Length: 235
Ligand code: OAD
Image 1 (cartoon, rainbow, N blue to C red):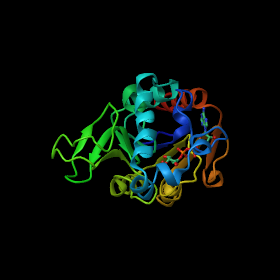
Image 2 (cartoon, rainbow, N blue to C red):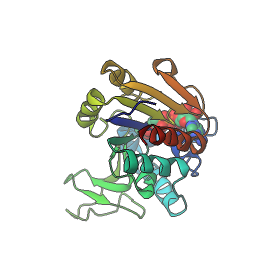
Image 3 (cartoon, protein in one colour):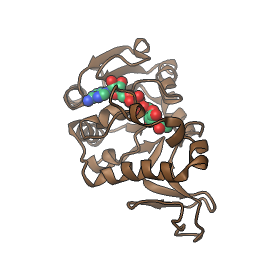
Image 4 (cartoon, rainbow, N blue to C red):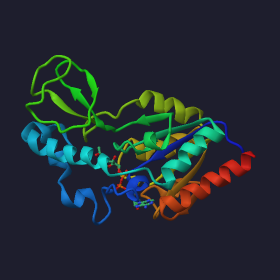
């Protein structure tokens, strides 16, 4: 494998599946149990804030029992030993950082953070949120929400991500079904910039034909092997 200077790795729910975090669109996934309109839109939050808090409280509490898997650790190793790697994750869990990844963009926000809609302050958050939770900065109640991006909202750091896609020479997509934009369009942007594009997933994603290469299998198997191959090329 050639040596790449600037690598962008996009990750999705499939990366954390073997850590015990459900994916969204698999048959037993989160959207088979919950209506995304009710728990992952600003309108759903306005209609029933308690139901949305319950959903994200559950996802936040998961962090007391989940740990990074071999794929998260392999990506942290790639960053440490290869360099030039930025991970852009759609996952709101904190498993990349727990594995040691430093260069990380949480484009859909973070389950372990809360945001106050009144004063726009952001806070590390490890306990349950409720409509009665006061903001630690402005003390108002009723404005606290999980610091995650809902359908209909703009993902975080899109300008920075766009710059990274314009200048990367390798784009790797891992564990994402390719259903949700703008992330699903990153492969096209990277390709237009001349980057090689590789998909690692359990099965072909929606955009599988857009990739130069595809490797299929569970993330804990294919990602460490892929990282070995990258580091071998560099050694
Ligand atoms: P999806 O649930 O749509 O897709 C997960 C992908 O991971 C599927 O293609 C699976 O085949 C694959 N997969 C499952 N287990 C795997 C494993 N062990 N190893 C490798 N791959 C595996 O999740 P995302 O594409 O991440 O957004 O979903 C994108 C966004 O849609 C999420 O961030 C979330 C969701 O609705 C919001 O909530 C705004």
